[in-house]
Picture 1 (cartoon, rainbow, N blue to C red):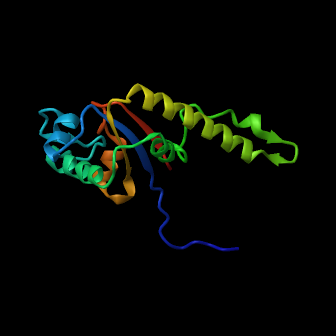
Picture 2 (cartoon, one colour):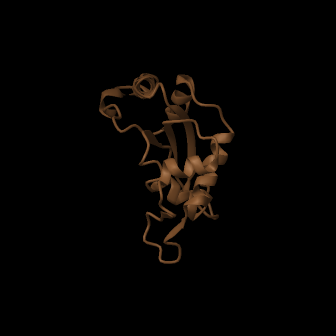
Length: 163
């Protein structure tokens, strides 16, 4: 029997597909769309040591991520969402067989849900500039707050937990 003796992480990450109403040209555009006139991004956790971060700092991270990509097409959206946990997961009992579990049908049905959700989002926001992001609590307190907080609440978005 093997025994693991090192640190075991229980980190998570989440993917976001976000529709911006106009193409951000500068970090200030991102800040305005994400925060309006708020100067701080609040920590969603009850940490007295770090209750918030400057919204400029957070907007700069998002802006840097935007500059690394072109606005998404439908294929990018599907790819960003396809490996996460669905809000509407198929009923797992429907895939149990006498000889095991029907993984291929289960994964095909999950992909079908992702494709439908992606098409609906894309068509609804066709005039927007859509970008994808992934943030992880494994990257420190700020990125954990970005993953679990209300970072994109002022914009249309889909969040998919990638645990």
